[in-house]
Image 1: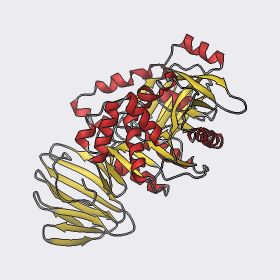
Image 2: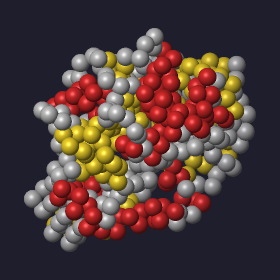
Image 3: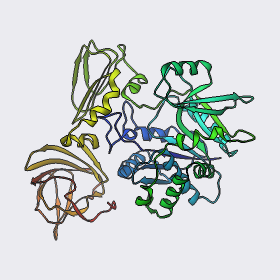
Length: 479
């Protein structure tokens, strides 16, 4: 049995703002841990035998973040499929299944669809459950993994399981139920027949494509045409953008899985595999607090906070010291450019709060103070009407594009490493404490040809400093 992980790494970055942003969503966060959610999703599969290289499906804008996170854990993906726009999990899995069928001579792979933003504390039992579930997929079945409820939750979908078969086998999947009210959730859990919907599924690629073609033919056609007209670029595969944008948006549950239990089959071939593995979808700050390791006063403290008389709270600092006194049931999350302060019981107001941001604060929803680029990062240190100061870090053996600006000049000062600079027809090598001036309208490029990071302080002068004031002539990242 060959198991092919399909890592679904989408997300808009809203529910865990300000740590997550649209261009740096939850899969790339590493709250409390060494590795990001995306990296944890892959690393916890290491003990599964016959595991194939994963296929990762993500937004086009996140392609280099995904690539960097995979390289950091020495993971070589089979392919990173780039969605030009998010269309939920059913089209994402359809793209992955079609790609698998295009590179495989037979249909002996088991697709294991895994959201890239969950937390699992018991990885040993988790892997055992996945292996057991995938053996049923070999029989051309469909498997969904249900979480044994540990509390009454109204924010999760539920799965109803039919009678167990003889021995340590799963039960049949009888029904999907969307988020119930508290009374109904309590009654369902009391029966012992209901499980939380984890969003983890197992199925052969041919079976998934058969189901999606039957239940959602528009999704099937859009993905098929986008794959056929798509193109590969090293680790990346790009479905045709305009075709894929016509695809409707639906989750795996709504598109297929909720309909499978109502099929008229002589023998059931859809199952629930229960798991009790310390699972959380970390969908909100409150859920992160609930499933984290807390101090004696039930506080989750991350970073550099000082507290007195603080209870049942979460304080996360990433740049500055936070001093807090007399707080209870409070969320405080600090980043370089924003601070969230909220009552845990009112966290559902966060979406409305972000919608109130005016035009001058839209960037706070998009990206962090430190912005990731395929060549490294930049961070805005100061900005006024006629100048802007940035710190650039160029990774080893990387370079910015050959480009020019129409509305700003740039002054570069090397503070660490060695810079190779193209300025018009000139080629310069600058060491620490040396500088160069790039006039408006001059083609230029900054390169780091060494094995250590290059750090530059860039002072921009002019009337406009937007990132769209760039004309690229050559770019190794195909932007």
